[in-house]
Image (cartoon, rainbow, N blue to C red; front, side, top):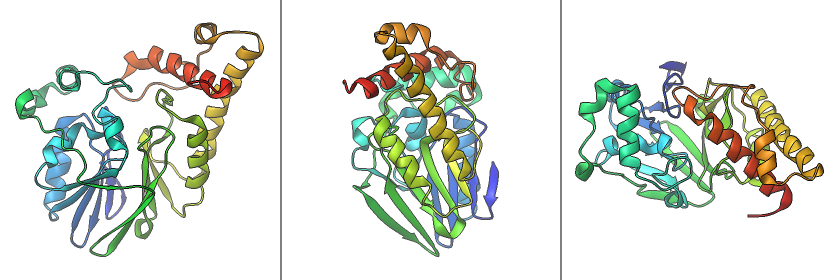
Length: 284
């Protein structure tokens, strides 16, 4: 794990999202849970040595952020946006057999932890018990957590700002030095959310994927999204339909896919083009 402050830790070098911990005087708060089960369980043990795990906050409902919720069931309250159930427990934006998908991930990339995976009938999806609409303040011990609805990447996206620690956990609103997924994005909302992030007074942004960044990275993320939009816009100007745009537009050479997901490169390129095409043509 990487220590950002004496009370904030994150893990950015495993498959899935960047799971993080914030310690307070009355216990800890987890933000997201990745699919590398052995590391997740190590993080839990690390946190419990300093006190109880009081809350788990999910920044979104895609499986790479909520896979580990099972291991917090009955122990910690789960917090998320009120729209979280719209995509909760989904793979790449599609409702599918997420249990088999998770087992497959463990078999390929975290095999030592496979025996720790419960049987299907014993697996607890563990949806949020506490939800909010636009803004929520959570006080725990000596620490204040400001939760904001930040739609764009998904309909349930949220940001966790911890002013005392000068850090914000922004989930997949930011992809740091890796491929940006627009597969489920409302691009107009995402651009507005990036504007909002720049108003936060922080030293650290913990992205959904990739290394921790500072505020300057927001402009880089915005610029890359505009490159996607521009490329698709030029295709539309040439008279290309969406299939022709998909065939001819790719940014696969710009960034790698985040750790352990190389097989998703074609999917990312295709769905990013489709989202930008729909954004520019105002179609659904």
